[in-house]
Image 1 (tube, rainbow, N blue to C red):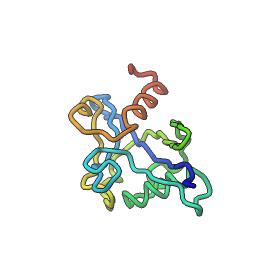
Image 2 (cartoon, rainbow, N blue to C red; image 1 turned 60 degrees about the horizontal axis):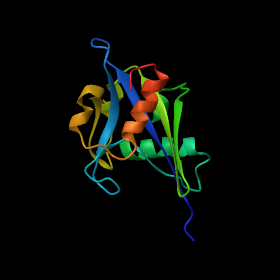
Image 3 (tube, one colour; image 1 turned 45 degrees about the vertical axis):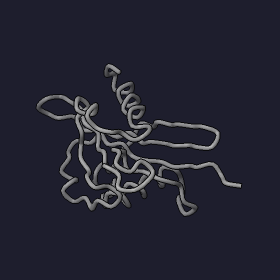
Length: 145
């Protein structure tokens, strides 16, 4: 019998200091699931992961080559959960103060990795769940949904 899927990811948000507009870090996937779509870094739980948070951190590093400890060292992220009987997903929503860390990215499962302004998201083919994660971030930051 196949066990239910359990996974996690990290959604990083950046507020432009000049325009005040928010962006989300997304990568254009080169493999399934969601090949060709823009998604947050994340993936499946593995037995060596101490928690779903550890899964999200490991997957973020595996897909971007960036350690979250350098991006948001003492963070207390918001959490978005999505549950179905066969599928559990947890996204850690974190605002960052700079995008400079992208210069050190080692892109693995993406053909591109970038911060995309909320106002431009409608022009991108987004992976399942991304819109819900953005809505969760907006709700927690008292932004219009």
